[in-house]
Image (cartoon, rainbow, N blue to C red; front, side, top):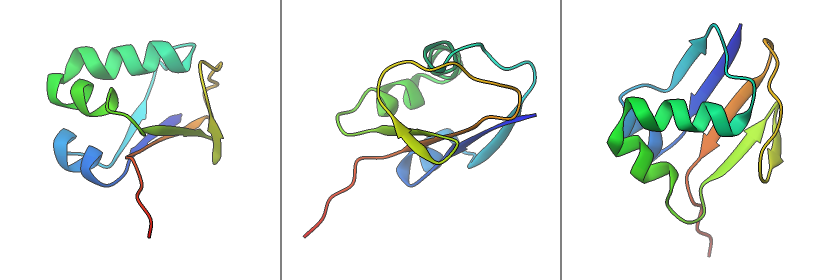
Amino acid sequence: MAKVLLFGRLSDIAGWRERSLDPLPATLAALRAQLCAEDAGLAEALAAPGVQVALDQVLVRGDAALTPRSEIAFLPAMSGG
């Protein structure tokens, strides 16, 4: 079963940190659309600049195919010093 993780302020906004999805959308874009449709606050946070996505612990840009064993992590913008 696929696992979706939210880190930092994203989990605070959504009210959850980890969630299993079954069935899983076929693509990362479809997953993001599903999460955004369920929670307007999370939709706004995911659209913020600097939010990144890791698929199976590898940062991805753009869309990607998902599998039933995928781990998808949404990471808030990071700042450093």
